[in-house]
Image (cartoon, rainbow, N blue to C red; front, side):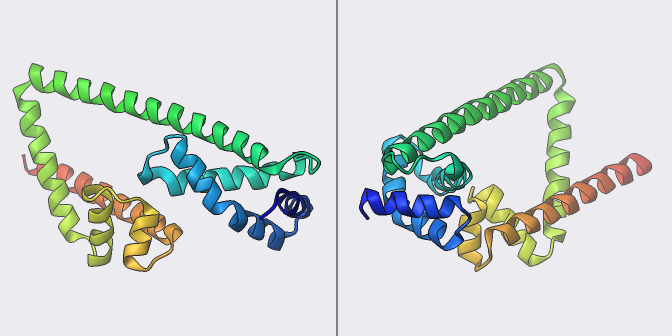
Length: 189
């Protein structure tokens, strides 16, 4: 699609025309994915980041000047979202590293800690087996196979929002189940 057409769609979408917004997003879809790939976004995160860029683009449309080329404007949004992605990932990795170091230190200081972790792992495995089959499959796809909610939804024929709700329900069940088993062990121990 030509830049003039993109600018026209952007101007229409900025006024609340949802059909124009949808057409605009579809028109830039392939270019956006190629751009994000070239910007070094991992394949596993491409869809999520593209959605973030599309959402940010839509929110920013009222400030877009249709006299300026559209694609450079979209690229600036993609660069901003990419920077946020990497900052967020580094923070998450730092937290995981800190927690891993803490656990290692605890295990080294207290041999009983490793035994405690084995007991907790056993309790969690028991609780996972008590989940409804559908929830157990979703938990397995998420935490063993490492799939995100979009990919799980594709595999199971569910909307990503439904997958996220079901994961939340499963985590809540698992939390209560493990807590209950802990309390039971404390009571009988």
